[in-house]
Length: 97
Image (tube, rainbow, N blue to C red; front, side, top):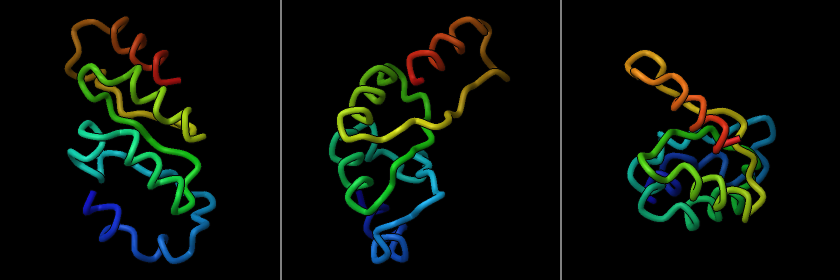
């Protein structure tokens, strides 16, 4: 959560980061610990879109929490390089979409 208060000071004062998509990896462990709170705070400072990571088993929960506060998941980091099951990678992408 510290990243929300320290990493985005210019945006926090502006309250309209139009054209910006919040990259969830920049928020570290805050997202898997409390995605609902993180997403609500991102919306409060003006974000409308986020770029997701695949947090273990949180894929469906991330999508649900984002939708609950009106955030769009515009893109995601997916691991094609080390995955041995490409269909699983596409399944994750589908659940985030």
